[in-house]
Length: 260
Image 1 (cartoon, one colour):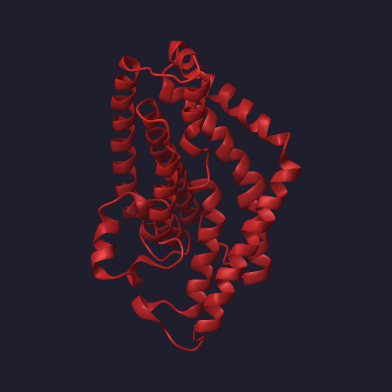
Image 2 (cartoon, one colour; image 1 turned 45 degrees about the vertical axis):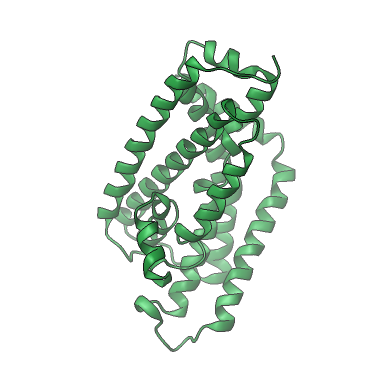
């Protein structure tokens, strides 16, 4: 019940700004079209590229990655914990009769749901029309894709929670978010398939959770990989959850606020 209440409140709060958020949606759609235009300019429609990708495969790959961004990457920076530390709100959050991670995680799902409906979905429909983005006919494909996206969103929530709690030890944690964002653009396969990265960078990527944020959901949607990849998503989700719980235990023993 608490999960639904917190999620609905965050969703309702975002509804107040949906007109201004439309600008972000338009800008994101345009960026995706720019990426596609670049690939169209340098690609050869009649030739298969590395790892068996055709120009059409790459266009669909880049397009669906852009659709996923608002679900798997663009969420609240640090889940807003750094702001709570500056105002002193964190002390009240820790006093609530609910676990801090669970509380913030539930709220963030409302943000993810809002962005799915008002950002990802419009971009998805636009790309179906403009780029002939394929729509899977198999219910199984949809099921694996949805599960992959849910796990990707959850992993990113966990990572941002870990980024946020560092503000209890430092006066500035925002830089960690941008490091995370920068790494994700390369290691998640956002702009190019992971198969096209140098071997040493591929190894680093596969040792991290980043491929499960973008690469795995997109490959499952395009029916270019099997559902066995979801095992890795589940393992990373479990591991990040344990890490969040351990870090929260440390946080309860060290509460240093700058506003109270």
